[in-house]
Length: 219
Image (cartoon, rainbow, N blue to C red; front, side, top):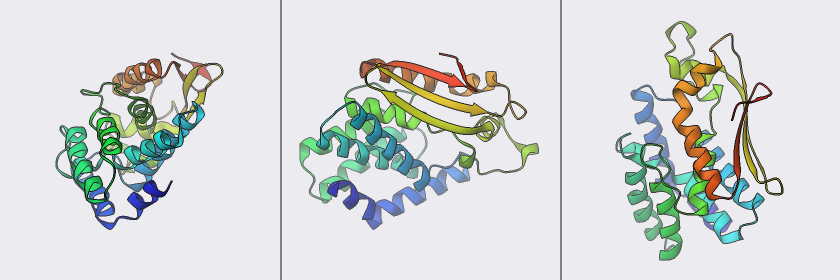
């Protein structure tokens, strides 16, 4: 994973990730800093490795996961496409191969639910990893009385884990939700689009998508 480590150590990339998160904080979005991009990178690697993809694709997936949200430093709208353009410039400067850059920026440019399309195994794995990262620690506002529905839903998730089983051909998002904070229905109000995108990504990878909440299979 030498290329991934090169990306993680780059000070410019660190600055873009940090500033992107600060921009989202200013408009009230949940955490999108190093905790999020590291988890997405790791889960993208996990999906591809579990499904038996080669080491190059696994590493490129990890890089796409780490860089996928840098476009938020410009604006939240169209951040996937902006981030892909930024990633091209960064990786070209780091002398990445054109073919590798193409795979990475294609995945980044197609990860947002507004206009995402599964264009490659790397892109599908990135979608699964990104849309599965719902958790209490992403909520910045810790005052329950001022929570909006996004804060409540994320804060109510006390545990989340993405599981992939190659033999049984499924990808499963397993959540534990504190229903004293928000009803399960609110999760679907906020994240239905993401779950449908996870289903499409799973289909692309030859998997069935499952959503399990509080021990009950919902999808």
